[in-house]
Amino acid sequence: MKWIVLDLEWNQSSSGKEPEVARIPFEIIEIGAIQIGENGQMTGEFSELVKPQVYRKMHSYTSKLIHLQMQELEKGHVFPEVWERFQNWIGTGEDYMFCTWGPSDLTELQRNLAFYDLPPIRKGPIPFLDAQKLYTLCYEEDRKARRNLEHAVDALGIEKDIPFHRAFSDAYYTAKVMLRMKKDRPAVYSKISYDVTIPPATEADEVEVVFDNYGKYISRVFESREAALSDRHVLSTKCFLCGQSTRRKVKWFSTNGKHYYSVSECPSHGLLKGKIRIHWTEEGGVFVVKTQRLVTKAEAEEILTKRNKAERKLKEQQKQREKQLGIRRNRGASGKNEEVDG
Ligand SMILES: [Zn+2]
Image (cartoon, rainbow, N blue to C red; front, side, top):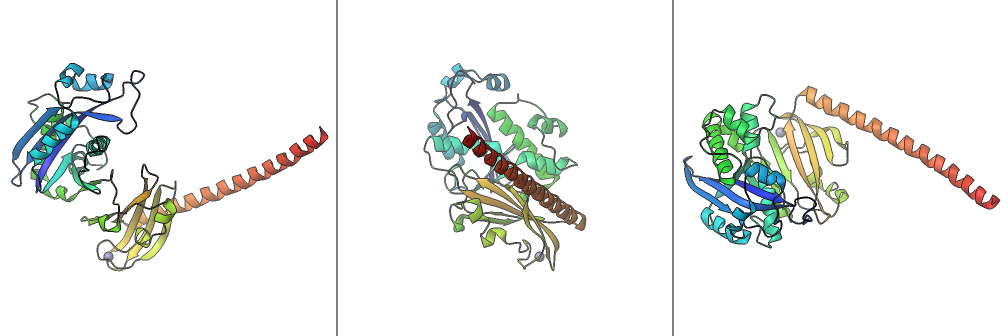
């Protein structure tokens, strides 16, 4: 499968001068991309400016960062035209995977497509390689730090032969970092990310994938959080590796109504941590992303501690609420008395 290493530049409302259009907070002004073939060679380049239709003034941040002026953009073509050429460049019916530095490019790309009523890239979540995340997994000891592209290029000693912060150059350097990781740690490419700007519409579109040490499930859209959290598949803690039923050690609980955790035990694979993250769609629907991973006993203990803390907090809040209700009731009573008195 070939890779389309993609980078976008965008402009936003320059506050105070132009109002923000909610459907398109970031308007794409440049598309840059590199194709990498099966054999790991760069096989094609794409670079085009986009003529803005929404924000005609350059945000100070945009012009400072990417050194693009409005006059230059006026020479470009409108987004739907550039997008058509980009798709032709990829080739129709081709098997490819997007690769970007960080998760935001695909999100903004899909928002721009929706703004122009253009067909979506896919009907559901888009699998992609997040080069920034992969870089962290390959080279950062804590496996958490998120680095900018230039940092990665410097750290890997990649030659800086063109300036940064233009769509094409950033795609080019992202491609270079990707190819370097392919050499150093080929296994890292199994770590596929999913963009969920368009969540699965039906059960058939749901995503269920297993990586070497964790499993991921992206549910369809439900009417409400309650509906999602009463679905058997959503709540299931069956082992992602072998599908066996597990013994629940810590039932699903939440600390904030958005993240839910559980611990269960597979007879063959041991302790599993479950995590559900609730996502709200713009239309008010709800879908979940559930992950499962193997954990140590100490990590399982940590989740239990977290649960106990959450329970204590909930009890305290309930007590507080009851107390306040009591006070309000008393006040209400005295208020009425005063009225009668007056
Ligand atoms: Zn198992």
